[in-house]
Image 1: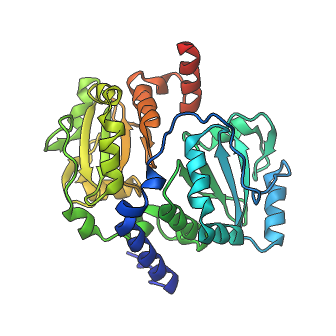
Image 2 (image 1 turned 90 degrees about the vertical axis):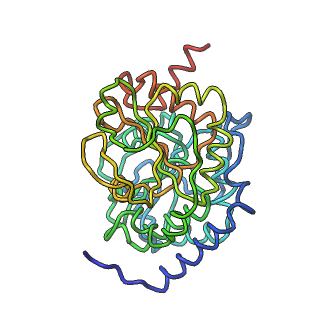
Image 3 (image 1 turned 45 degrees about the vertical axis):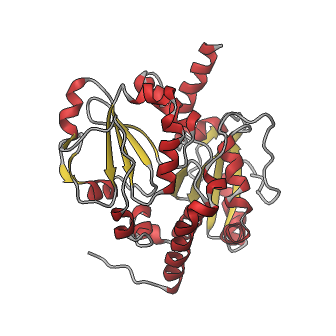
Length: 344
């Protein structure tokens, strides 16, 4: 297997992530805990965001003239609490902001917008159509384009600053050409540290052996929780969003499995492949704990939640899966909008 040399920048990344991870409990709750109901007032973009010319190819040419490594398209919503957190944490961090502006121009689009945008391949979309094209199920979402105009990386949802900083470096230093983000980030995570810590036990988790192929015969969707030990974000998920009655009611309608993403626990996947939790997480490119991946009764992935998730987003996804909204719409946001209209 190709071994990637450990450069100075990689060593610095490993150190910075370790520091962030070990201090997360004490100082990072403000980034992870917030009310994710719809905002009362519309968000205002940071003043350093770029204004698109309406043609991403032209935007890219301007970025290249300025010595940038590409462009980033931001997809958000005007009253999105997760977008607000992104602005208040990651984009408010001076180091992150300077690093991003040094290497990229960032252009903002509204996932419900109607303005026309020409993508780097010359195809024309509305802002809404472009967001659906790139499957930006959760806002904020970011698409990274290289200097040739090729979309090379996507982030869906809000991540704490240390994870977002790692993603920026992963793309800017072109590690994506050699490995997946989960592999890249795994080199900064101390697997033994996260393996030794215990996972939060819940009554709805199915006990071993984990034969997920067999579970597909009971006509229920399957939710697989990829977690890790010593995980503050995992603890927060269980103590708040997953402790509420509405969430539990939806979870109990599913087959629910909890795996330590660093462990060699034997697993038979919904597709019938025999593997381990660690290898399966790697093959699914799981890079955030906790991540929840949902599968239908045929063993096909429906949707995943692999970013910071509070109650309303979690409940919305659980409802989408249990109501089989994916059979009615291939876009989660459109389905949720329909449900809100019905409820009125």
